[in-house]
Amino acid sequence: MSPSADPVILDVNNAFLRNVNHTREQLVGQLLFQALPADPNDPFDTGVEALRASLERAIETGQPQAMPTQRYPIRTVNKDGVEVFVERFWNAVNTPIFDEDGALLCIYHVTIEVTEQKRAEEALRLSQQEALRAASEAEAGHARLNAVLQATPVGIMMADSNGKVLESNAAHDTLWSCSSLPRNTVIDFSAWRGWWADGSERQGRRVAPDEWPLAQALRGHPQTHALIEIETFDEPRIRRIVVCSAAPIRDRDGHVIAGVVALLDMTERLKAEDALRESDRRKDEFRAMLAHELRNPLAPIMVAAELLSRKTTADGQVERTSAVILRQVKHLTGLVDDLLDVSRVTRGLVVIDQRRADLRAILA
Image (cartoon, rainbow, N blue to C red; front, side):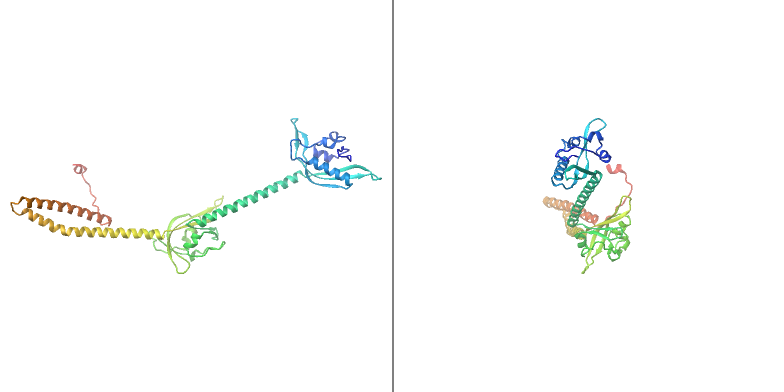
């Protein structure tokens, strides 16, 4: 191209023609920036400005000017006849050419199209950004999950398919009275001490290593609401009753990749329930004793009232009084009998006599 601020294209090779999708007639003899103009609707198209500045430096210094990768969209006409600008990226070197006398003849403009390379780099950059964003979100999600795990009052531990500890929260460590199990420590279920406390036929039997709910979950068998009395690791050893549930974690193919167990301390609740049952038992015993004690004075009072009513006397007041005493004593006796019946029911001493009955007689 000619050595001027607004250069004329003197010649082009076939490779350049293919890169810009133009014919030789469209370029040779044309002003460079009219044949290959900037996109007036693209505020980020700075290719013309950068190329013009590089040419001016080459003319001014007489030295080759290597340009960093430039975004230089190329004007073209699509199949519908609409003029569009196609995004292209280039590496270019502008070299001044001199004659034997040192006069500047022209500028030798060499370009290498790096559009695909640039797009690949941009895709890689975006992929790296997305990976960093995903990693940041995953880290934040893990931090939130860890905060929830540490705050929850339920003991939770997660292990991989080989029994290596992945996570455990403070409540789990407190239940077992031990420091946190290090990550990747393989769980030794034989070291866990526990006894079944579910009231079944296995009540009081030692939990075998392969019977622990987490061990079952790692084999793909979920366990729910297993009531177990555990013994802590640290001295002094303390026994606690826990409700234990465990579930396997599977991958997309259904293979078990991990297991999670949750333990809820039921010790204080069960103690409270036992205390309530004991209180209720003592109340029933007191009620039965009270009923028996009330029956003792009622019997002689009833006998005395009956004797008084049978005595022949002209005193009507005595007769009426004895009748009142006898009637109220019978009423009080009925209440005491009801109280005794309630006491027998609550203590399970009532035996129901089941037999066929004529409903018509009952209704009559």
